[in-house]
Image (cartoon, rainbow, N blue to C red):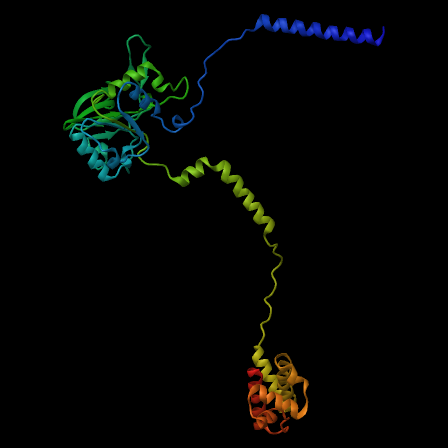
Length: 381
């Protein structure tokens, strides 16, 4: 068989196998479209009450969401509603007093029950102001049945609470196991306070297990807890009573950026750092300063009759500066040079002559006088 026919048969076999595989795949599989819940992006990724706000707006209710509780900017009215998703024990005494006064004149306040904490609980908190005490009882589910829907279980993970004797209870939701409650609506003055074990049913929802407001029974329960001032005023939905710290946010969420930069900085510092060897003894410090050495050298020369050397050193220093400042005078010799120096310095000729003459070897007064004159002449050049 020729190579041409052999290659053709191989190609035909490959096409046949490919065709059989395609036919098997088409007979056993078919394209099916299935809905998939995509992860949230934009505002719903950080605002858990975004879906509730948009639902209220579509129903004609004026609603807005806030990260923090800003009472001066909110300008609460008598028929408004405030929902606090975060722990209300973080509020300041001034905010507690303002909210209590607002509820008393007709406001509607919704609070989420936090876990019991002896360090945070007390009468000065917003919960204590309304006679609500967190309980250490284990969370329990409460059945919630909506007509035409499957039975739901609510408040399964929320802490339970008890009410004081003076609390004016309008609605309560608990069971016969004990006196703790999962939901209650209290009357306070002309307003109302709703306390819920948790508010998960008011959130956006993330998946099939955490449905949030996408579930019809959750929407009915949300309509029930928002009923007192529904459509009568503005609804303020506060999803964080205290804004997170900037440094905490950077440490928790910004580590993919700052951690590699920190490692790169440490590596650069390690490359640029000086390599330290064994410890060396400190060098011996000089026992005398330079001025002391010069003075000792001069005294030594003077003691041994070498005073002309001292005078000659000062005279050479003067002559060296004279060559730079008055080169014509330095080029002369004898009396002509002395006269040129006297004219340049405007000194008497005899005084210049005295300074330029070598003093006697044992005349200390003459040595000091002529050295002083030479220094004065050099400084005036």
